[in-house]
Amino acid sequence: MALADLESSKILYGSRKFPQSIFLLQQSVEKTTKGITGIFIYGHETMNIYKDIGKGAEDKIKHLDEIKIDNESTLISFIHAIKLILSGIDFGESDLRVTRISAPNFLLQKILSPHVNSARYPKGEFSPLSEYSENHFLIKHYKTLHDIQRSCLNEC
Image 1 (cartoon, rainbow, N blue to C red):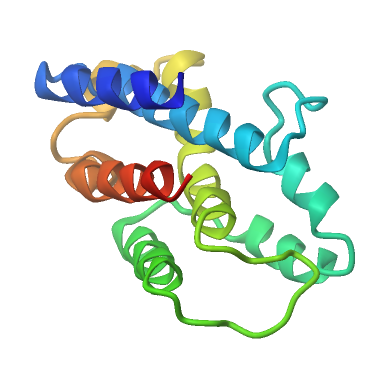
Image 2: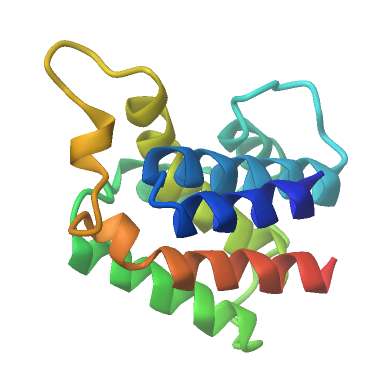
């Protein structure tokens, strides 16, 4: 299902249905996270999975949780961190059990979740169709995020 969501996301992106493509990309990440960890009790609150498996690393997770990815430079920093993890660089010991799959998935979830909520449940005058255009920083880097998720699925 994670692979089907990822492939559907790419089709929607190609059709310029950007909010929908972001939603299915995040759904692919969420399903991969649940598949990797075997934890399904949190429903759509996938970040709780990482809090659960990260016992002892709560301070690190809390610090990451406080970071808002609301601009291109922060997104690029997260992308670089994910690529370093995927290339096998060890960031030291942690109870989080950082692996080549779970850490990138955690960071992808962190990147995508806020955008999925605002794109699916707009409030007030907010229009996801105009906000998530080709000029939005997330859409500009969609292909990279897609490729990272593809790498995570390949590792699975």
